[in-house]
Amino acid sequence: MREGASASHEAPVRVPVHLGVIMDGNGRWATSRNLPRFEGHRRGMEAVRRCVRAARELGIRYVTLYSFSSENWSRPAQEVSELMGLLKRFVRHDLAELHASDVRVRIIGERASLPRDIASLLEEAENLTRANTGLTLVVAFNYGSRQEIASAAQRLAIEVAAGRLSPQDITVERLNASLDTADIPDPDLIVRTSGEQRLSNFLLWQAAYAEFVFLPIYWPEFDHAALLGALEEFARRERRFGGISARSGSARP
Ligand code: FPP
Image 1 (spheres, protein in one colour):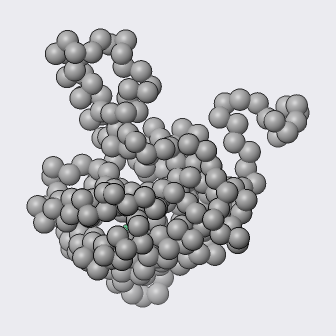
Image 2 (cartoon, protein in one colour):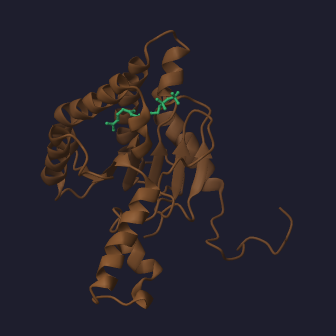
């Protein structure tokens, strides 16, 4: 899939087809204001709404939000339960509007170990919006990229052991097709807020050729202008996918 021109006149000429977002800094936003961490997550939820709205307006086709990582279970039980509560609230309050806006909701991550009510809400969101063709909102929940790759490898190993595949059949394409993101194009751009510059087990395989933009704001501060700034930076980058520059023959940076 190619990057496209935006539907909106205010967008940079080149917008990513798929934007990945590492929503970082809710806790720091809250503690720097003497507020409980939960308030940061609650305001982070509002930033999620702004992000989805802005992405739709700018003509982005896929947005993947890193909402809860496999490693987030190590947080205090109260914070884990608050994050679960926020997800439930998000589905209950926002699903109808997302559906009316033609947004398709997809979930990636490990589901078997999730509380039953959460798992069935996620399923409900996917089922209701399955036929929508506008923005695809991919919620990475209980997601870890290494775990995703290991599970895909296990499934392929089972096929080999059963004699349905040979080891030579395990190609880049087949492994790609065994991931949670099988029919989702690779992210073109990954944005992380809070100034931290790392991937933290997010879309490791899929981000092989992604551009990265690290924003010096906390996630609750994210808005349309912040997204536009990241897209402008993205539009200035030259993506070579391992090839050589179309602009110049210079070997110097
Ligand atoms: C990172 O901030 C954020 C999270 C671990 C959770 C993100 C969740 C939301 C924004 C709300 C739920 C969203 C959906 C789509 C249901 P942090 O707590 O790691 O911040 P810190 O690094 O400053 O402590």
